Image 1 (cartoon, rainbow, N blue to C red):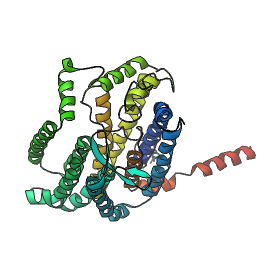
Image 2: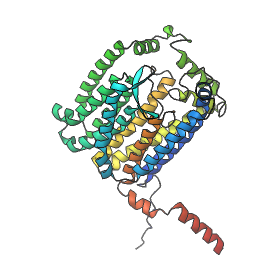
Image 3: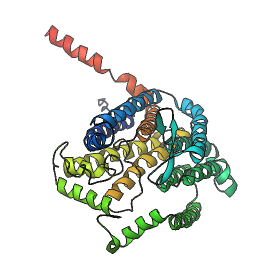
Image 4: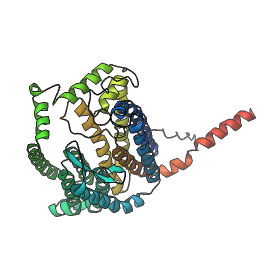
Length: 401
């Protein structure tokens, strides 16, 4: 009787694949982000700050250091640990959002910042992570009872409504849209019947129309987007027009790192909301496609976690976090491409902004923790020799030869 040798499991089928996809995507987006933030923020730093072109970039590096610390710590924790800290994260977010209403700092027509000592913090970024984790915790507990209005609203729906109300009190509709994506993704994976999504969508559309009508700036942006004949290149269409010019001038390979023309005061918010335009200008179509590939890697990793993980909390929370990061990224990109009206949301891990960067990395730390606890993942990591051990083995083998 001949026994056929067992075929080794492919790298794609390995339980550790989700973790490495997240790790690679994070590294790609961070490296691209640092390069483009350095280029796009240098002119603003010279003109507005202290004449030092490195000022805003160094702030971004400091935020990166804090964010990477949270990512490393969070990725090494258990799913149980993330469940324990979830109420604390959401509570801190709600308290800070309430402080914003009373003593917040306004920026771009929105009141969504709070000053803590020498730094300003955007509590809505903390709320994104807190709400994603909280919905994962409560919906995983009551997922078999999501057929009644009471169980849909208590406690997950009430928590989501409270966070949305506090964010909208600061007139930050862009963040409210992202929070809506988080809520929809969480309830979808939790198994909410489709009819309730139709009712929720109708309510959101009605509320969105009311908010648009209430804000002159919002309605003007949407009117211009719907009717290009109302476009004023020097006024309401300045950002979109110069963003399009930046992408067009980049061509296939781009003008080269640091060679953007639009960053010289022509394109407002070049280092955050419209950083994708600068990326396309300096690194061309190839650079923008690399970002899209990295986002696709996050989508694949999150899909694997949702399908493979045995803990409903990890499944729902991972879906909500993934929808936040990727959904926000595509909103940002769609705005730059003039496929959506200007909303004012940053490109995660790429745009400048300490709060967004720190909390996005913390969220990725949670995703990596979930990936590390997939069935078979721990065994796969233990069986995989470390880089140091492999290097020593190669060196020792060379000496013996």
